[in-house]
Image 1 (cartoon, rainbow, N blue to C red):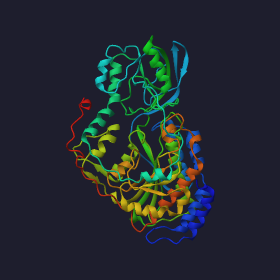
Image 2 (cartoon, helix red, strand yellow):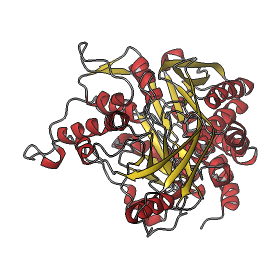
Image 3 (tube, helix red, strand yellow):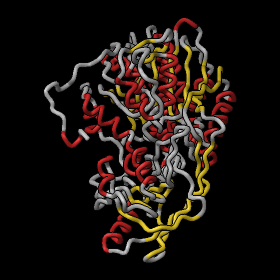
Image 4 (cartoon, helix red, strand yellow):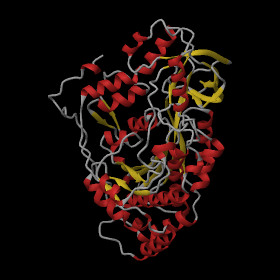
Length: 541
């Protein structure tokens, strides 16, 4: 493995002396200054530590998120950025955990590893009741348990038999693995799969209504990772649509113990204390923005963003205080150097990402494009995520062409190893040139394909040039993503310094380029990928 510190010194000399390649749109002397400030004078870990240890988990509209909104704006202003402000959009209720506890009290007392499911109500004291194992995946499963759930805490997940990982829990990409990432992402349009997604998105509400009607007193789900990890995701955050029953997620090992005991009988009894709070004082959520003004108001702007919100099981460190700290550090570096770019450089901290990318989607609709016709019904909550990108046509806003490039950071704490070109071959050639000063820092790969599930997705869906970086996985997918292990200890300082430095250089290159980043074609309604497919009868109900 390349020694990081030795290669950094070598790259500083390289960047300061290399003559710019024609068409590369780079100032190599500025790159050297960025590398010096970003690698030798970084504040990225100080920023990440405050977001995690001091503020803690930042569920959208929670009291901790309100603290994060104020603190990040204050830091941007302290560093000298301009136009620092927040922009609101309709979201829903705030929710936070004061304390919680789940115990098995019969057939023997034992403390269980558990967390309240987000946006479920409090138990109003201690809830004690026997369990029943009643796995439900679809609404048609309800008939199997009708008349059996009154007075019970219902375990609604299938217990399964455990998992055995074939990969190390912590890893970095090998050169071979990086090479395999370079694959064009074939588009696919499957109306049947789209319809299935919509049905699944409504299932949580359907199950809650069924459990209430049957007289259940609470419910529990199984964690989707072994290792005593819990997550607690829940999506019924809209005002007026809160769940009826207290819900908890149990560690997989504890859940299976309960299921085994219930199988042989008698069913165990649980004791649940869920002291959680709703906050309806402001149902607007807020994205945070800050600028380094450009010298040419007609040249548009480039942008970088990460989501500030997190789930609440841990402190939201790798997902996504890491990305937020990288965005803020890139802003600090460029402000400290006093750059005066041609285009404005804008920094965004999104909220509502964990609830269907709602913050960045609200910004896209306001600034880039809407989708669908004037008579289409209004979409709210999770349905916006599933239905909005399937609406036609795409309707560009007046400012659509002002966005010259957007870079997103949301893959944990790992070192930048490259960038996804998002099926945009013209952009790939530009990125290869911009990466050259950073090859010794491990930034080597341009991957052709697309990435999904984070805040550049809706920009791409309307034909805007949005991009995501390739990052070393570390233990993001295996342990920290959304879990109670997502704490500051899992962040890697050298990696975050490297990422923030590269991001600052990419932003300055894009801001000073002669031309805006090449755009993908404006999306139009696609043809059905397999016009001869028949529906699956199992999915038709």
